Length: 168
Figure 1 (cartoon, rainbow, N blue to C red):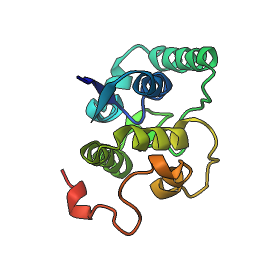
Figure 2 (cartoon, rainbow, N blue to C red):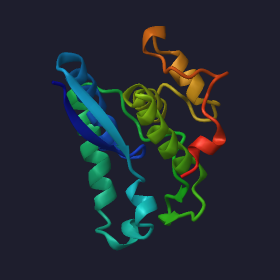
Figure 3 (cartoon, one colour):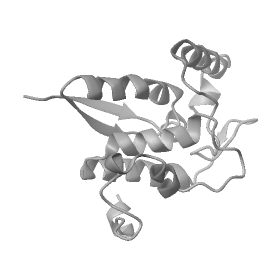
Figure 4 (cartoon, rainbow, N blue to C red):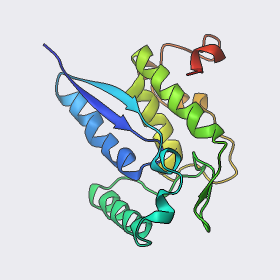
């Protein structure tokens, strides 16, 4: 009997990204099924969180996540392109969030297709590992194409899900 775990994953959380390598090893080494549960980032769920919290909170998360990445030897930089629209100087979060809503829905769809870990791994690398330079146009399909064919998702560019499947 296969064990299953739920992975609550935010595309903007450094800790979600840093947990991926261990999660992938867990799946590879044991008979474990990971159910992806994509969640919106804290800044989207509670827009004024960063204004109300201790001013040192963001600095602590940045320093701590950098240390974890160095200790685990995981390539790391803060996300570019950033999946949410936020003014980092004023910490204002825009009301319209086109990127994170689409990414989160695609993560949920990938879970339905049984390819959630492959999808999250490909997208998280694009956002967090520093191999994509700012200004470079990146699509999900290019990120997934870099994976070996045996691990690529079932759907391809020609048979990708329709837009209606991505609506909440």
